[in-house]
Length: 358
Image (cartoon, rainbow, N blue to C red; front, side):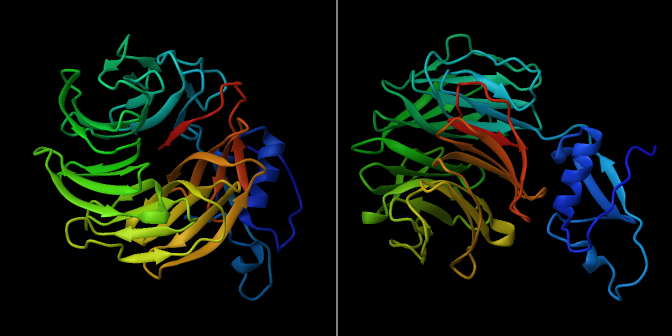
């Protein structure tokens, strides 16, 4: 159906075209795809690049993918919020939600809160499956990772403990003392049988997921890791720290960092990695998002910035999008290609302490 007519400048990128169409038809930008023939165009492509000889018109198709984005985030109110404006928040934690891991294939999620509990969630119905939460930590839960295939999880808390969980039974499998301070970051992989954690004491540790044994330990010093991501193929780990740098490690094989990627902003608070393409995305205290090349060991570019520090992020690499939460309560979806803001979540007043994007 013909819904709008507009003139487009040839130097405009696809992202700008999508914004104009979204405004004309009243559709979210994140649901729109612009195509030339059967080719879906990236946001960064400019219209003039589609006409190599600069002659003739272009026939482009705009398709609306009505499912939109799959995103949930945990608020300071302890509830799980959907990106969809009409969806009510799901109550769970008695205090702020600190961490979140989602499995979109099974519509399941696991969260940890400042109340010291973990909650399992049904994402399809947006409700908690654990009325009072899974009890184990004496203080707040700061980080977690789940292996959904085996119904296992591991969490780290302000009590310095790593707790290994049997999610099917909702019970603690083992408690391991990991840090003299707070366990502030965890990355893990079930098939690798590896759990890597970072503590506020500056120590990195690797434990066996089934054996619970300490396999490796490294002193990160001034780097002071605050976030981490694990490559399930190679076992490498990338961390982001207080020194604004990223470091690449190989637990078990190497006692020290293999590579340092020097940052250009403040402390790194959160990151996501696309190991297949050797990329990482980080968010920092200066409100910026940086894209990194892990292979070359360098920061590629700043994608976007905001006036408040980044608190959490999640990336959907196949869509070239990232959902980012800020300390001022703003929750925004960004295009990693164009650096354009695609969409903003409804302001709930609860802020976002963690986010999952699929």
